[in-house]
Amino acid sequence: MTSVRVESFTGNVIRLRWKGANDMPLTKHPRDTEPPWREWDRKAQKSGLRHSVYCVNGNQYTGEWLNNLKHGKGTYVCKSEKSIFEGDWKYGKRSGFGTYSVQDPITGEYVKVYSGCWKNNKQHGYGTYFYTDTEYYEGDWKAGQRSGWGRMHFANGDLYEGEWLEDKHCGQGMLRLANENRYEGSWKNGKKHGCGRFYYLDKGQMYEGNWVEDIPKCGTVVDFGRAEASMPTKYPIPEVKVADPEGVLQMARSLLEKQE
Image (tube, rainbow, N blue to C red; front, side, top):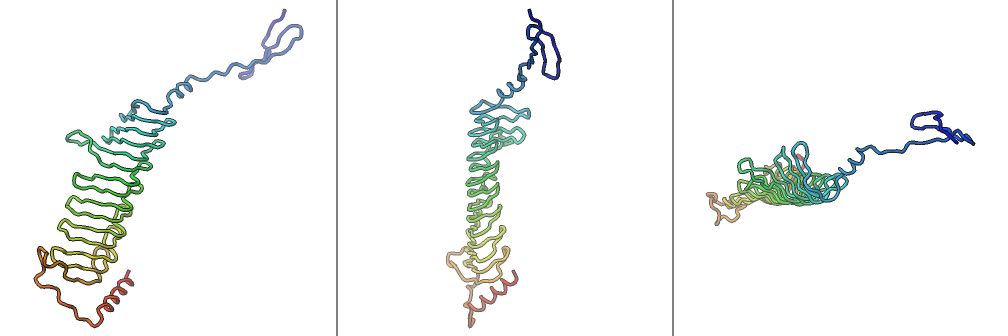
């Protein structure tokens, strides 16, 4: 006949002693039990294709998940911005190809704003951005800004095609105005800067030379397409008789470069 008595209790360890032939002590550890919230949390983790998931602020997402993050194809509706994004996601951020649209306050329909490549929630790569129905940009983006090559259609009918840097014309590009006059040459910080040509087709003239912040500083003006011009000047440009016209022009350019 044997019996058990509690010898000591410390923390989660209970020491028991058997009273019998050998009077052997026994140490017993209680069984580890997992709290219920751990199981609930595992079931709540989102991976793979899921139905719509609603947030307390009214936003909702329908699509693919990975480790509880938006990852893959999906559609996100933002209630506060009244917008929809449909496209690729990577670890919770818009990355890949996608289309961003906003709701028209009058019609209630969603109007496309940007369609193209994304990276880390910003426009990155090639894409088209619609500012209005008549004004849009198509070309390269970098970290949410127009950078690289692109074409900008302005609402007034002007068109710029060329290089961009941080949302401004920068590098080589062509600006064609609505009246068909155009500039071809260098740009810096959104302004004509460096060597370039401006064709005044309405007047039948062409300027070629150097520009500084949109202002022609040093160059030559000649008649160009005067016969087809809609508003030609009263008199043609007379011939300039200088012993060394190229030398004079080069000297002026050198002075201009020193000022810069």
